[in-house]
Length: 110
Length: 112
Image (cartoon, one colour):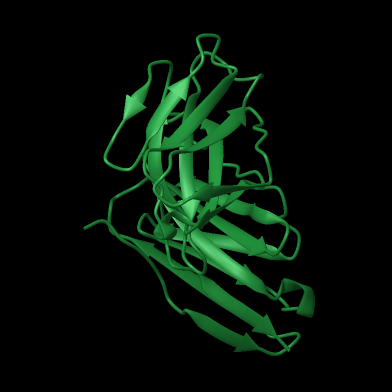
């Protein structure tokens, strides 16, 4: 069974902290994505990666960075967390055709 | 990737067919139509995709118009568990670095 695993289901962090959200896929997919989802705004693409060490900005990259050192792992980094980054974060991977999503990380920044 | 337009919400009676429309008038020749759904508090789940022919699987049917500018997802016998947000996306499946961009989707409420 194919799998995209996000390291935490729920996370609470303080304003100003550096936050790492981890995502691992076991399908050897080239493409991986990070989204955030907020009520009324749908899924918005933050960053995506199409190969190891390759990354592209999505629609809302400000305040975020990413790391893809290995093919199976794609990390989202909040350099200095702020309260407006409180959200549901979803990771996905895709080779061609359908994308597979993780269950999401609900991050609260206090 | 081409932009899609979907109605924000629709209701459906349990046991009846649910027909979900999607407009993608700027679709290009090598772009496929994909449908996903997201049940509350879960990650989106793939349903079906197609290029120009109608497609059917165990979950749904996809009808794409001849000019490919719109499509309809059909849930043949809606159940309460089909209550979800349904997303229509247009994308090229094989291009490296190909974005996968979601719109607002259609919130479907299946009523008993």
